[in-house]
Length: 77
Image 1 (cartoon, helix red, strand yellow):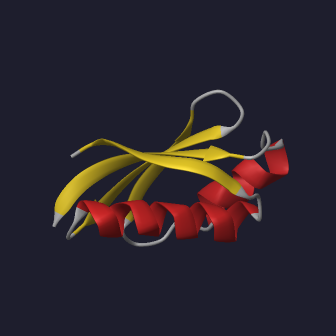
Image 2: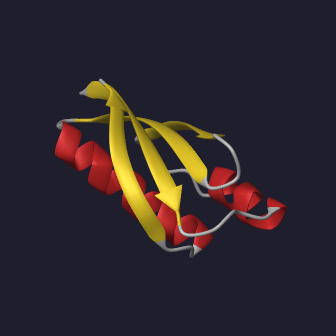
Image 3: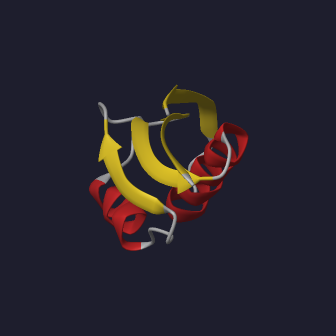
């Protein structure tokens, strides 16, 4: 599996509880979450394809924070 970095831009800023929930509910394929500002989550993960990486990042961030996603972008492979 390849390593990817995906930027997930949210509809609004996350509060501290949502950020903690994000880190607490990390899946096996995700190696880390980092905040870039208050509304962008950088997700590092392992995935078989770039499309699967983007989908996994979106799903995990949405499930963890319950905040709508504005945009998602593959940053690097």
